[in-house]
Image (cartoon, rainbow, N blue to C red; front, top):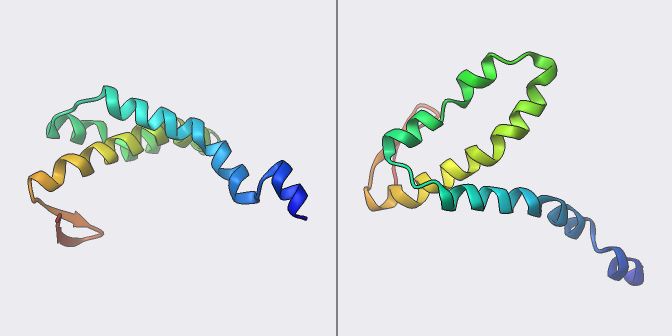
Length: 97
């Protein structure tokens, strides 16, 4: 059993290996996009974009939007703590600390 794990890796290792290209793409998008708060808000129109897509093509569209969405959220999370802002999360006001 240990030999097979050594050769093929654990299930977790295989999943992580599959996700690395996506992580690299997200990090690259994040590094190249230095956006202001207003630009970040305009970028985050995923709900509007996805609502216009047919159900059969929705999974493909979500996978295309995913790296951009993660990059925008990652950028916002880095910038926001410096500003100590309140956010609405699921209809609850929260202070970013």
